[in-house]
Length: 287
Image 1 (cartoon, rainbow, N blue to C red):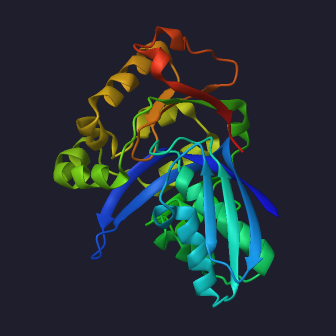
Image 2 (tube, rainbow, N blue to C red; image 1 turned 45 degrees about the vertical axis):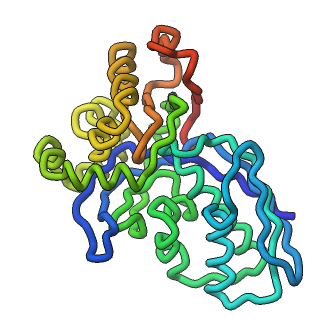
Protein backbone atom coordinates (compact mmCIF):
# COMPACT_ATOMS: atom_id res chain seq x y z
CA UNK A 1 0.00 0.00 0.00
CA UNK A 2 1.19 3.49 -0.87
CA UNK A 3 0.37 6.45 1.38
CA UNK A 4 0.48 10.08 0.24
CA UNK A 5 -0.16 13.41 1.94
CA UNK A 6 -2.34 15.59 -0.29
CA UNK A 7 -1.42 19.15 0.68
CA UNK A 8 -3.72 22.15 0.32
CA UNK A 9 -2.76 25.25 -1.63
CA UNK A 10 -3.55 28.93 -1.34
CA UNK A 11 -3.50 31.58 -4.07
CA UNK A 12 -1.73 34.65 -2.71
CA UNK A 13 -2.54 36.46 -5.95
CA UNK A 14 -4.86 35.52 -8.82
CA UNK A 15 -5.56 37.47 -11.99
CA UNK A 16 -7.54 36.40 -15.04
CA UNK A 17 -5.79 37.52 -18.22
CA UNK A 18 -7.84 35.96 -21.01
CA UNK A 19 -9.95 33.06 -22.21
CA UNK A 20 -9.20 30.29 -24.67
CA UNK A 21 -11.50 29.36 -27.52
CA UNK A 22 -12.48 26.21 -25.61
CA UNK A 23 -13.76 28.34 -22.73
CA UNK A 24 -10.89 27.78 -20.28
CA UNK A 25 -9.75 30.94 -18.51
CA UNK A 26 -6.11 31.99 -18.67
CA UNK A 27 -4.70 32.96 -15.30
CA UNK A 28 -1.58 34.29 -13.63
CA UNK A 29 -1.44 33.27 -10.01
CA UNK A 30 0.93 32.77 -7.11
CA UNK A 31 0.48 29.29 -5.66
CA UNK A 32 1.76 28.24 -2.23
CA UNK A 33 1.46 24.85 -0.52
CA UNK A 34 0.49 24.87 3.14
CA UNK A 35 0.66 22.29 5.91
CA UNK A 36 -2.97 21.17 5.75
CA UNK A 37 -3.55 17.85 4.07
CA UNK A 38 -5.77 14.89 3.31
CA UNK A 39 -4.26 11.42 3.53
CA UNK A 40 -4.50 9.07 0.55
CA UNK A 41 -4.06 5.29 0.73
CA UNK A 42 -3.70 3.36 -2.53
CA UNK A 43 -3.55 -0.41 -2.90
CA UNK A 44 -3.08 -1.82 -6.39
CA UNK A 45 -5.14 -4.83 -7.43
CA UNK A 46 -5.01 -7.06 -10.52
CA UNK A 47 -8.02 -7.25 -12.83
CA UNK A 48 -10.05 -4.68 -10.91
CA UNK A 49 -11.58 -1.28 -11.59
CA UNK A 50 -10.63 1.70 -9.44
CA UNK A 51 -12.65 1.70 -6.23
CA UNK A 52 -12.69 4.75 -3.99
CA UNK A 53 -13.84 5.49 -0.44
CA UNK A 54 -13.87 9.05 0.88
CA UNK A 55 -14.10 9.10 4.66
CA UNK A 56 -16.18 11.98 5.97
CA UNK A 57 -17.63 13.04 2.59
CA UNK A 58 -20.11 11.68 0.07
CA UNK A 59 -18.89 12.14 -3.51
CA UNK A 60 -20.08 10.07 -6.46
CA UNK A 61 -17.14 8.02 -7.76
CA UNK A 62 -17.48 9.19 -11.36
CA UNK A 63 -17.32 12.84 -10.22
CA UNK A 64 -14.39 12.37 -7.87
CA UNK A 65 -11.22 13.93 -9.29
CA UNK A 66 -9.08 11.28 -7.61
CA UNK A 67 -10.94 8.54 -9.51
CA UNK A 68 -10.81 10.53 -12.76
CA UNK A 69 -7.04 11.10 -12.30
CA UNK A 70 -6.41 7.40 -11.75
CA UNK A 71 -8.35 6.45 -14.89
CA UNK A 72 -6.52 9.18 -16.83
CA UNK A 73 -3.10 7.84 -15.78
CA UNK A 74 -3.96 4.24 -16.71
CA UNK A 75 -5.31 5.36 -20.08
CA UNK A 76 -2.33 7.63 -20.79
CA UNK A 77 0.13 4.76 -20.42
CA UNK A 78 -2.20 2.04 -21.78
CA UNK A 79 -2.00 0.10 -18.54
CA UNK A 80 -4.51 -2.76 -18.55
CA UNK A 81 -5.62 -5.44 -16.10
CA UNK A 82 -4.74 -3.26 -13.13
CA UNK A 83 -6.98 -1.36 -10.78
CA UNK A 84 -6.70 0.20 -7.35
CA UNK A 85 -8.49 0.56 -4.04
CA UNK A 86 -8.23 4.18 -2.87
CA UNK A 87 -9.16 5.47 0.57
CA UNK A 88 -9.17 9.22 1.23
CA UNK A 89 -9.22 10.62 4.75
CA UNK A 90 -10.50 14.16 4.30
CA UNK A 91 -9.29 17.14 6.27
CA UNK A 92 -9.40 19.85 3.59
CA UNK A 93 -13.01 21.11 3.21
CA UNK A 94 -14.71 20.72 -0.18
CA UNK A 95 -15.55 23.87 -2.16
CA UNK A 96 -13.25 25.97 0.00
CA UNK A 97 -10.73 27.25 -2.58
CA UNK A 98 -7.94 25.19 -0.98
CA UNK A 99 -7.57 22.69 -3.82
CA UNK A 100 -8.58 19.61 -1.83
CA UNK A 101 -10.05 17.68 -4.75
CA UNK A 102 -7.14 18.65 -7.00
CA UNK A 103 -4.63 17.67 -4.34
CA UNK A 104 -6.30 14.27 -3.95
CA UNK A 105 -6.05 13.80 -7.73
CA UNK A 106 -2.38 14.83 -7.76
CA UNK A 107 -1.59 12.43 -4.91
CA UNK A 108 -3.30 9.55 -6.71
CA UNK A 109 -1.13 10.27 -9.77
CA UNK A 110 1.96 10.32 -7.50
CA UNK A 111 1.00 6.92 -6.08
CA UNK A 112 0.45 5.51 -9.57
CA UNK A 113 3.84 6.90 -10.59
CA UNK A 114 5.56 5.14 -7.69
CA UNK A 115 3.92 1.83 -8.54
CA UNK A 116 3.95 1.75 -12.34
CA UNK A 117 6.98 4.05 -12.86
CA UNK A 118 5.50 5.36 -16.11
CA UNK A 119 6.28 9.03 -16.70
CA UNK A 120 6.97 11.44 -19.54
CA UNK A 121 8.16 15.07 -19.73
CA UNK A 122 4.62 16.41 -20.33
CA UNK A 123 2.85 14.52 -17.56
CA UNK A 124 2.69 17.44 -15.11
CA UNK A 125 1.67 20.10 -17.63
CA UNK A 126 -0.87 17.79 -19.30
CA UNK A 127 -2.53 17.11 -15.95
CA UNK A 128 -4.05 20.60 -16.21
CA UNK A 129 -6.78 18.98 -18.30
CA UNK A 130 -8.05 17.56 -15.00
CA UNK A 131 -7.89 20.88 -13.12
CA UNK A 132 -5.91 24.12 -13.08
CA UNK A 133 -4.37 23.45 -9.64
CA UNK A 134 -3.19 19.91 -10.38
CA UNK A 135 0.14 20.65 -12.15
CA UNK A 136 1.32 22.72 -9.17
CA UNK A 137 0.11 20.17 -6.63
CA UNK A 138 1.72 17.35 -8.63
CA UNK A 139 5.02 19.24 -8.86
CA UNK A 140 7.71 19.41 -6.18
CA UNK A 141 7.38 23.20 -5.99
CA UNK A 142 6.12 24.79 -2.78
CA UNK A 143 5.84 28.36 -4.11
CA UNK A 144 5.28 29.02 -7.79
CA UNK A 145 3.79 31.36 -10.33
CA UNK A 146 1.18 29.56 -12.41
CA UNK A 147 0.24 30.70 -15.92
CA UNK A 148 -1.88 29.55 -18.84
CA UNK A 149 -4.60 27.31 -17.42
CA UNK A 150 -2.23 26.37 -14.60
CA UNK A 151 0.10 24.19 -16.66
CA UNK A 152 2.98 26.71 -16.93
CA UNK A 153 4.87 26.81 -13.63
CA UNK A 154 7.69 29.11 -12.61
CA UNK A 155 9.01 28.21 -9.13
CA UNK A 156 9.95 31.01 -6.75
CA UNK A 157 12.50 30.70 -3.96
CA UNK A 158 11.70 32.48 -0.70
CA UNK A 159 13.37 31.64 2.59
CA UNK A 160 11.29 34.28 4.40
CA UNK A 161 8.01 32.42 3.94
CA UNK A 162 8.97 30.11 6.81
CA UNK A 163 8.63 33.12 9.16
CA UNK A 164 4.93 33.42 8.37
CA UNK A 165 1.73 31.49 8.92
CA UNK A 166 -1.64 31.38 7.22
CA UNK A 167 -4.81 31.40 9.27
CA UNK A 168 -7.54 29.89 7.10
CA UNK A 169 -11.14 30.64 7.99
CA UNK A 170 -13.60 28.35 6.26
CA UNK A 171 -17.18 29.64 6.69
CA UNK A 172 -18.72 26.22 5.98
CA UNK A 173 -20.05 27.48 2.64
CA UNK A 174 -19.61 25.47 -0.55
CA UNK A 175 -18.73 27.59 -3.59
CA UNK A 176 -18.92 26.23 -7.11
CA UNK A 177 -15.84 27.18 -9.15
CA UNK A 178 -17.89 27.08 -12.35
CA UNK A 179 -20.50 29.45 -10.95
CA UNK A 180 -17.82 31.90 -9.82
CA UNK A 181 -16.14 31.92 -13.25
CA UNK A 182 -19.51 32.32 -14.95
CA UNK A 183 -20.23 35.33 -12.74
CA UNK A 184 -16.72 36.67 -13.42
CA UNK A 185 -17.51 36.56 -17.16
CA UNK A 186 -20.61 38.66 -16.52
CA UNK A 187 -18.64 41.19 -14.44
CA UNK A 188 -15.29 40.99 -16.24
CA UNK A 189 -15.10 44.55 -17.54
CA UNK A 190 -15.84 46.11 -14.15
CA UNK A 191 -13.47 43.76 -12.31
CA UNK A 192 -10.54 44.33 -14.68
CA UNK A 193 -11.05 48.10 -14.58
CA UNK A 194 -10.92 48.01 -10.77
CA UNK A 195 -7.82 45.80 -10.67
CA UNK A 196 -5.82 45.79 -13.91
CA UNK A 197 -3.46 42.78 -14.12
CA UNK A 198 0.00 43.44 -12.70
CA UNK A 199 3.28 42.43 -14.31
CA UNK A 200 4.41 38.86 -13.59
CA UNK A 201 7.89 40.18 -12.73
CA UNK A 202 6.34 42.20 -9.91
CA UNK A 203 4.52 39.10 -8.64
CA UNK A 204 7.83 37.22 -8.64
CA UNK A 205 9.69 40.06 -6.88
CA UNK A 206 7.10 40.34 -4.11
CA UNK A 207 6.92 36.56 -3.72
CA UNK A 208 10.69 36.18 -3.49
CA UNK A 209 11.05 38.89 -0.85
CA UNK A 210 7.81 37.75 0.82
CA UNK A 211 7.01 41.39 1.48
CA UNK A 212 3.61 41.26 3.19
CA UNK A 213 3.10 45.02 2.99
CA UNK A 214 3.66 44.85 -0.77
CA UNK A 215 1.20 41.95 -0.99
CA UNK A 216 -1.41 44.04 0.82
CA UNK A 217 -0.82 46.91 -1.60
CA UNK A 218 -0.42 45.07 -4.91
CA UNK A 219 -2.01 41.61 -4.74
CA UNK A 220 -5.67 40.82 -5.38
CA UNK A 221 -7.97 38.05 -6.56
CA UNK A 222 -10.06 38.74 -9.65
CA UNK A 223 -12.58 36.12 -8.53
CA UNK A 224 -13.39 37.84 -5.23
CA UNK A 225 -16.09 40.21 -6.45
CA UNK A 226 -17.74 37.46 -8.47
CA UNK A 227 -17.77 35.17 -5.43
CA UNK A 228 -19.01 37.96 -3.14
CA UNK A 229 -22.04 38.66 -5.33
CA UNK A 230 -22.96 34.97 -5.09
CA UNK A 231 -22.20 34.67 -1.37
CA UNK A 232 -22.32 38.11 0.36
CA UNK A 233 -21.55 36.51 3.72
CA UNK A 234 -18.02 35.74 2.48
CA UNK A 235 -17.49 39.42 1.68
CA UNK A 236 -18.65 40.27 5.21
CA UNK A 237 -16.20 37.73 6.65
CA UNK A 238 -13.29 39.31 4.78
CA UNK A 239 -14.28 42.81 5.89
CA UNK A 240 -14.55 41.64 9.52
CA UNK A 241 -11.08 40.10 9.36
CA UNK A 242 -9.56 43.26 7.89
CA UNK A 243 -10.79 45.11 10.99
CA UNK A 244 -9.16 42.58 13.33
CA UNK A 245 -5.65 42.25 11.85
CA UNK A 246 -2.90 44.13 10.09
CA UNK A 247 -2.03 40.98 8.15
CA UNK A 248 -2.70 40.33 4.48
CA UNK A 249 -6.32 39.20 4.18
CA UNK A 250 -7.22 37.42 0.94
CA UNK A 251 -9.66 34.97 -0.58
CA UNK A 252 -8.01 31.87 -2.01
CA UNK A 253 -9.04 30.40 -5.37
CA UNK A 254 -12.73 30.82 -6.14
CA UNK A 255 -13.60 30.79 -2.43
CA UNK A 256 -15.02 30.24 0.08
CA UNK A 257 -12.06 30.34 2.47
CA UNK A 258 -10.65 33.66 3.59
CA UNK A 259 -7.00 33.58 4.65
CA UNK A 260 -4.84 35.84 6.77
CA UNK A 261 -1.08 35.96 6.24
CA UNK A 262 0.79 37.12 9.37
CA UNK A 263 4.03 36.61 11.22
CA UNK A 264 4.01 33.38 13.20
CA UNK A 265 3.71 35.05 16.60
CA UNK A 266 0.75 37.28 15.73
CA UNK A 267 -2.57 36.33 17.29
CA UNK A 268 -5.84 37.23 15.55
CA UNK A 269 -8.82 37.75 17.92
CA UNK A 270 -11.11 35.47 15.94
CA UNK A 271 -13.57 35.30 18.84
CA UNK A 272 -14.62 38.82 17.80
CA UNK A 273 -15.75 37.63 14.37
CA UNK A 274 -19.48 37.80 13.71
CA UNK A 275 -20.77 34.23 13.80
CA UNK A 276 -17.33 32.88 14.70
CA UNK A 277 -18.83 29.68 16.12
CA UNK A 278 -19.86 28.60 12.62
CA UNK A 279 -16.36 28.80 11.13
CA UNK A 280 -13.64 26.19 10.86
CA UNK A 281 -10.19 27.62 11.51
CA UNK A 282 -6.87 26.14 10.37
CA UNK A 283 -3.58 27.74 11.41
CA UNK A 284 -0.87 26.42 9.13
CA UNK A 285 2.65 27.07 7.95
CA UNK A 286 4.12 27.02 4.46
CA UNK A 287 5.94 23.95 3.13
